[in-house]
Image (cartoon, rainbow, N blue to C red; front, side, top):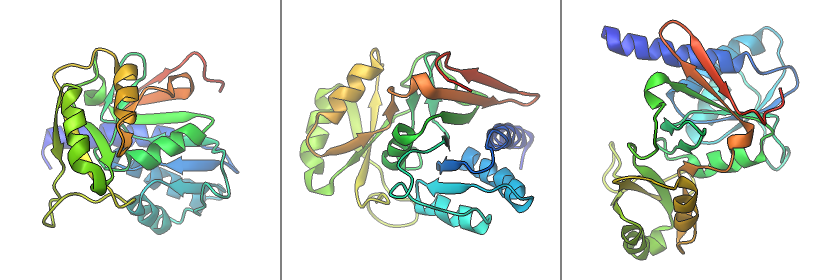
Length: 238
């Protein structure tokens, strides 16, 4: 691993560990998906082995596997429809704490988890902080049955939609929910809330990776080489 990669890993680890230390005994914790969240699980595992009692709700099969290996007890949203704290990553974060998520193709479950949580903690490295959303593509989960009409409708919103291809199998990426992912590249996103609503209104779209509705309960932990920066909505009650 070169020095740049080592520094990035250290930043992610710092953010993940700080988020894990926010968890208190007896909490129900939403477990997101992605590399920074996995550092959080690593730290949470250490705390659980020392006696911390928590229940985790994973947002993907991959996270469930990692959490079980880490000794974290798992539960479901059926048993806990209200989650104390959800911890997840992001592909982009803007100054208003709006997000683009979905590089791990788990944004549908992640959005359900964020909606059910009292507090939403986002762990990122410094590269994910942007002035305006849109450098990253917006992932959209789509029913396979309707993918061609959805592609046409997405083009009508001004993007270039591409069905995400799998890396170690032929054909499209299939989500944990059995759907396709369409990555939508926009030249600019002037109004993220309006775009999120427009994408959601397309028949056949299950969910997009724009997260604009949770800013009032969001805390962002930005991992850096020397320290973590915490950005919290003034509406968050700690």
